[in-house]
Length: 232
Image (cartoon, rainbow, N blue to C red; front, side, top):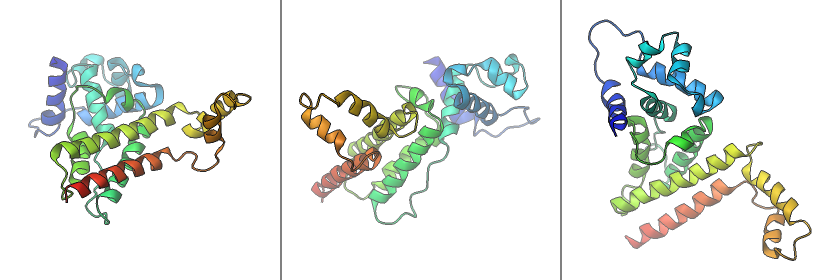
């Protein structure tokens, strides 16, 4: 809890507070960027205060003057990795194309920084950029008649679907998770079609491969549209 509070202070107060006096030799964005470079290359476990300090050309003790520890460092890294969300106001056609754009852009952030998948769950400090992503998603649903809770649930459902696609993509050597799964399942099902007839037929269907993102978004949006119609 103490680390979470400190991380929130760094994210919301220190980064935006005006500075007086001599310009510091480091800033929080530079420190977070160094951590991101390490995590992108070698995974989150490789991120240590020592390695970040070495990358920045300072001592570990100097780094501690800016960031108390790894919990706070990771919180800064997450917010910088997600960055500012896409602006959806100029997208025409209603909430569906806006949320479609939002979901696809979120997927690119997860895929660019796969380590964020393991640290963006549970109670934790959330920064202004990450919060802005949620603001954009909920703003896209304004005027639909959905309640506040329903709006948040839509955003959470979309995030969950995008997260699942990103996880599957990260685990697939070719970056095509359904193709990789199909190869494995087809090998297992060969000669066992009589035991798993419907499953074998489904995997034998050549249409719609590697379209889980599109299919899931369409199903979510269709469900949301039904819900908005009930509020009319």
